[in-house]
Image 1 (cartoon, rainbow over the protein chains, first blue to last red):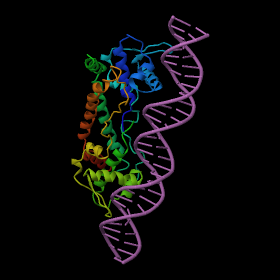
Image 2 (cartoon, rainbow over the protein chains, first blue to last red):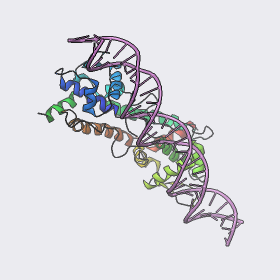
Image 3 (cartoon, protein in one colour):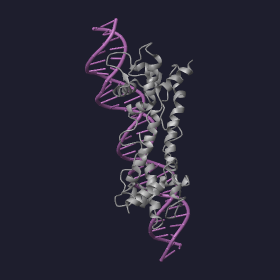
Image 4 (cartoon, rainbow over the protein chains, first blue to last red):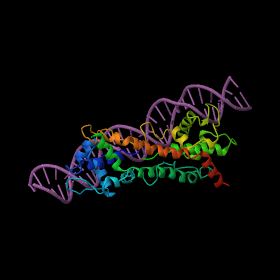
Length: 143
Length: 143
DNA sequence: CAACCTGTAATTTAACATGTTACAGGAACG
DNA sequence: CGTTCCTGTAACATGTTAAATTACAGGTTG
């Protein structure tokens, strides 16, 4: 089990956009080369980031820009944008526990809230990390 | 992306074993019926729980027992036992960032530690939840 | 209008989780 | 001792999903 690489791809994308800082137009092909993934994947992730209000892009126009400074974009924003975990939650519950069994008919109720707590703890941690942290490290490494 | 249902299956298994409390022999077929999954899946999970030292079972003998009280078994123990997340971590990193790009060749270094922190935070939370909590709720629901 | 871009649909490929069948090997019990 | 029931695995089938790929519609710029 792993969280889709679209998450790290999206972080990579935003980092590149901020790093380039308008000095040259950033296109899906340019990003695809830096990331090492297919341009269509990039454009799909672009669509998700755009829908989430994190980047600005429009059909026909070349160049992608950030909708707000990297200091105001967290890992959680991206995680939500690229839909790493759907509405059914981080944990996959077995679907057919027996209702004839005293454990089977109550296991869901006994676990659900605790599983949700774990997921929420992870998500809160993701809110503590901003893209400015990543960009800062990348700049330092190239200094 | 979701954590394999073998995790909730394993929790269910241990809860049943504790709930039945030796009043009848617990077999893979019995567990499969309560859980609503295939007996072979159950036996495979049994193997993982046994290897992790959480349950006692042996070939030929009927009946599965817990190796230690449920108060000393945490969600984390089970999560580790059933191998929800392998050595490469919770996050799937895109594998071919360009080494010719100043961002591409440093993005891994800039993200790795932070991704590991997130995973660790989640795992610490799982250590706080014991199977006694789940068993207690199930008993209450049947009282 | 030519070149280049975003946005998307449709299809393929690969990997993986789960289900299923089959059987080997040990234990319990009459 | 032999029947029965169990655990422990191997091998294969099935279903689902992520990612790559191909193709093209529609907008922008010069």
